[in-house]
Amino acid sequence: MTGPFYHRGSRDLQARLGTERLAARLADRYVEDGLSDGDVALVTAADCFFLATADHLGRPDCSYKGGLPGFVRVRDRRTLEFPSYDGNGMFRSLGNVLVNPAVGLLFIDRGRPIKLRINGTAAVSTDPRDTARFDGADAVVTVAVREVFENCPRYLHDPVTGEPSKHCPRPDYTPPDPAWKGKPEYDGIVRRTGVPESP
Image (cartoon, rainbow, N blue to C red; front, top):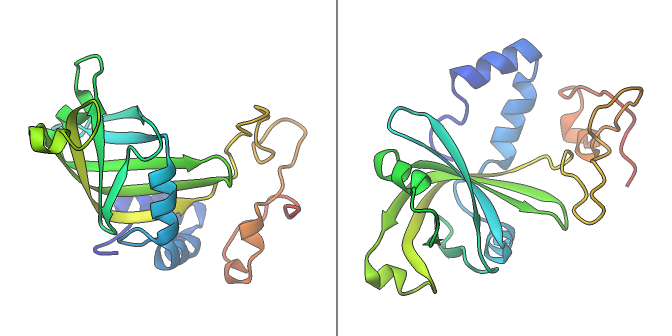
């Protein structure tokens, strides 16, 4: 990872809520500047992801991108690309990239479950030599990866049954702590709120 992972706003909330040591541990151990073999497998098997962009004034936007598995391609550990298909013609996300290339991508593997976040710098091409490499593409977005990290998946709901996650707070219920909080590396730096999660 290059450069600071947390900015002043993140650090302020970490201080307010007492998570500075946990946040530092996570950034140190789990934030990478390239894709692992597991990340590549997740990304290239995905049939969708969520794309966060911002305009020239920093106003955010988020869009869903979908296709057949393999529509997102990994050129190397630091570069991925995906097609832009025919849509409503607004080009809010890709238009944002043209004026502010910072992007965030969120992939969800519902089967395991895993949430993978990829932050980086994007570029848009409408060159026919690029679009010809993807069936049905109007444009191709290339992302230079800056940061890759997994998020705790405890609030993902069951994709098969539709049941809400057992970790979601609700009246008269104490959610279990996620299994990762029980790892020795987090002793003394995480807040325990419930009973340990059963395997």
